[in-house]
Length: 292
Image: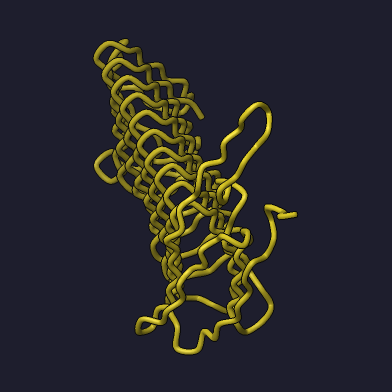
């Protein structure tokens, strides 16, 4: 009897001359793991009807691409009949040598993408449609994660970071480097911020924590709330305004130069006002709250 997690293919691939690992799948989950060997090990999970991925070297890139489509699982009178695979029970697993420092690109339409463990790469790019993107700890020059309706969850990311989701949530717990994060209806929770930051949301809420402010910050929402935490020893000029929401400031060390229910100008730190970066926060109908 078929077991959903059967390994239907195992292959070893040399990474000599390879600087990019590229994986594109339609419905299966993609899982990237660290390994102790010198070769890339690929395992595909499925059943006898699973269409295996195509493997091809294109220049310095090792590419894996799947065209399989999940078939319908139908229940009649309490009895399940399957004419093919069931979504969510199939995956491709890539165990990559820990010494690989190149680029990883993973894309799945309805499946999730996982990058587990701790990684040091040149570039990382993950793209999903309805699947989630789950990343452990990553250091890379450039990090780009995009999802249409799936969630994005990153434990720690160091580098130039871009996180974009339409209706999914975005969560970044820790890290360093520039950050541009954008959602439409999803919520956003990001922490450990210390560099140039742009956070955008339409109807989702934004919760952001700054360990320090050294470069310009821009945070905008339409109907979502913005809850901003700023380290007490930061040096920053702050402007926060809303159209129909409220602005509240609970920063004991801030020097308030102008305050109303809907607009606040403030300065933190001992540096001259003209020498400190600007944090700009705006909302149309959402509330803005700042504290340390």
